[in-house]
Length: 336
Ligand code: NAD
Image (cartoon, rainbow, N blue to C red):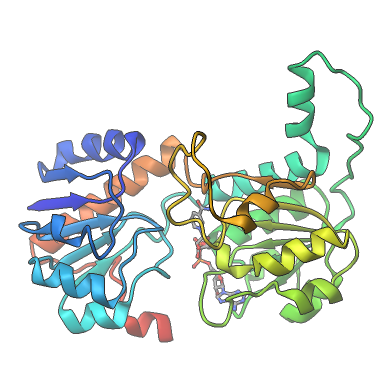
């Protein structure tokens, strides 16, 4: 089985190569992301492996199908970048890694929130220059604050539990599926509008769907509590970035911690430190003293990378052997 692995970086190669010792697939590591123009690189490969910002829309999938690809293996959990209906129509099976390490993302989320709130990143850059003054570094306790968790699946549930049981926050949650274990520890499920209106901190852990696109928009930010802290480690397009910048400029938002960004494709995962970046929204976001941003890093632990590599190659192995694919996603999955 030949697999074209798009958009690979050093850590992908390390963990996929190690996991491949159990399989012996022919892995072709490509630096390039999957786009319409790079789809032809999959010629002669039955499987293609992609990540969060690789584009698998209808046109790309048609190009892959013509190149002979029969399996698209996402080495991530989210699948908003894939046209599943087109994949089904073209006979390309799509698999993902539904749960490689919710702990990796949940822990990073809480870490980002703490860094932002307690200004740890700013303190570190001061201390490195022998500036030990504390002025401007006053933070807030997490204890007793109202924290809203949107989406209490695997990641959101861990975050909600940590904020509630670990820090003693008053945790509100919104999810069509109620987690009774969270209710037992005092998490209160409310309508999404109420959560966004009443929370002092909002952290996003739902998938990106038509229903959740721009879940945080201008109207939400106007109705929110003054000084709202927004954390997003899920998908960038859950937030209307232009509206967020406007709210930051009007001093209505207290702080923003982002691991994901609406237009991150083509920017994140690359060293652009010597480049001029054309995205004015991204550049403006980075100028605010109360915005903390990382480049889609929440998943990046050894445990998660190992689990991603193993699960992905196991799915390819199952596909090659004609076995059932427990991690397959179809267009019906999205609609249900
Ligand atoms: P999950 O499927 O276990 O949980 C998602 C939850 O969202 C489910 O409980 C679902 O019922 C709920 N949900 C669906 N629609 C909703 C809505 N409209 N409002 C509120 N809740 C809704 O997924 P997960 O493993 O917890 O991952 C959550 C998201 O985190 C993924 O969709 C992915 O986008 C993102 N993610 C980011 C990283 C990263 O590195 N930054 C890594 C992994 C996952």
